[in-house]
Image (cartoon, rainbow, N blue to C red; front, side, top):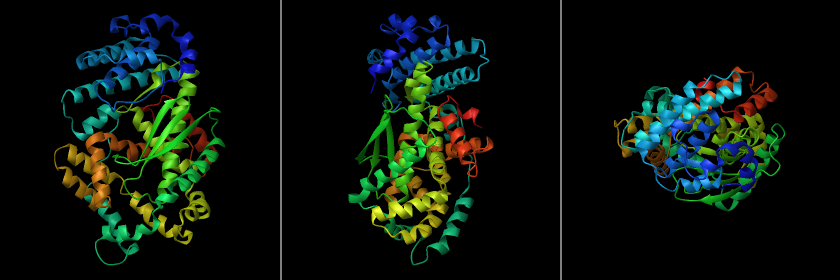
Length: 436
């Protein structure tokens, strides 16, 4: 996962702390600069990874720091150091440079979330909104059943027949499943198109790339594991049927211009060019995830407008999947409405984590209001059990990123401006509070 070249490039920037870094993390009293605080932050994140196996999503910094983290640091000590580092950041003179200001704010928010995660690991149970605020610096809006029911009512005439709406929906969309023996072909075509479109607007390192693996028995549909040196491994879960719209959704979200591009730009612009070592580690349960997931979801609209996507899919992806392109408009007319049910997942998670309903009731809620079949609802409930309030990062994150880009002129009618603003967001240390 670590890159020897990256370590070599960072040596001049870390020379003052190399001797210390090879032996032990600096005590909070020793930390005196943002650079030293950043180094201490990285080591704290790695230390948290010894207590929480899901916490460190990616790391490609100095290998010796990873080795040092093998000795478990007590949770109380991690929380104490995180608080002290935040205090020291607050006492450093506020920078006038915008990127330096964003860097300081980034470290402060990330450290605060780290301390909150420690409290959770020690047994503290926060309400859904309290947790999302503490970990992701955001709170999702609350919805009653009414707006979801209105969307479901609008779907009724589009899915005629016998049985419940859910049953009719599942029977109808069986015609749009990508056959397993064609899945990789379709997915690779989607990746190729998303990559070509992204490279037309964003300059990426020449050796960037990722591999694709197909996996099972996961609570998620797709995952990007960033390895450093501009490389990723993307896993696609095939436990459940993969529908034709997931080809571009996954290619864009996990690859171009989503997670893979986001991580590659952070590595190039912040770690290598600026020497900001804190971006060589990605703690999953942190405000950074709202930006990462929100940008990855919105990236699907950046790389293809609705009209462009429909034309490309009808010409390329649907024939490759052996599906009838003549039904593409019908398919997306329904799917566009179903997508509006996204916040129903938040409500299931909120009720479940607040103790208002149990896991079975959460799955039933998702079947009724998110229009998920039983297997998919149970998979989603497993995701909620494992990742908890993380679910807000997808829908709320997407809406926040879209609003931020559009307020800065990056509308669908101004695609070049949208690409520029999107790239600047991906290559910066902005937090949720910076894009509200």
